[in-house]
Length: 118
Length: 157
Image (cartoon, rainbow over all chains, first blue to last red; front, side, top):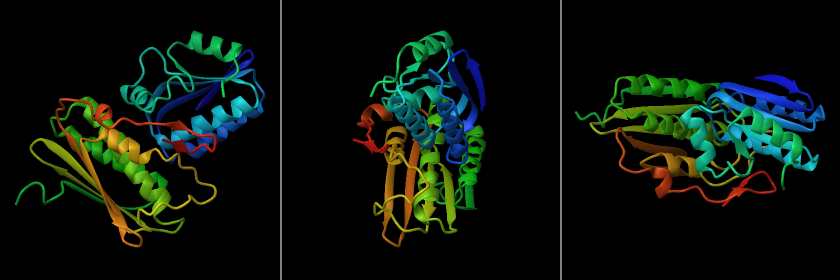
């Protein structure tokens, strides 16, 4: 997991397989990103190869914090996501909730311009 | 002796978070020798992960316990059985410090071609899931996940 700052938006990059074992580390990274007080946070899943429901729980908790702090919050899937990663977001109906977007540019713009919806 | 009766893989692991990925790797290894559709394997990885995670998070309430997984390859389907000897399937609050979204069972139902759960208070839990190597439909359309995240952070259907 890497962080990268794009001006006022913080990018949290999630690569590889993630499940209940790595969920606490991801939660810590997201907490830190939120605490840094950026205008918005983008969670980049374009390099993720596997996610389970405990990771979705961490991403939803971060979204809740973003709403509380009136920060932007966007999940970026990339143009060529791992099918299983796209599938868990689609079948849970979470694509419009986070929201989930494909391109990095769209993700950065959305995180910068709009606070997360309640 | 039919292939239904003898598992091609039998794992007996400590019910800890790091074991879930081991089960997933074993599943990928088993699938390597089967004519299983790539999307079915992807769904199986997720469903089996959720079943193992339930055992790790809920079964033993923080105490040591075992996670028992068997995989059976039949002529047209892979069946995975996940067992624990824990507190059973009676719903209990998750202990402080752990986080469970409550999406595990809905995901298992949406991603497997058939699944059943057995057990009860004090009797442990067994989750049996099967996955057809080739599918006609999408189980996620037949057993769609409803609801969404509630204000508490739990899934509300």
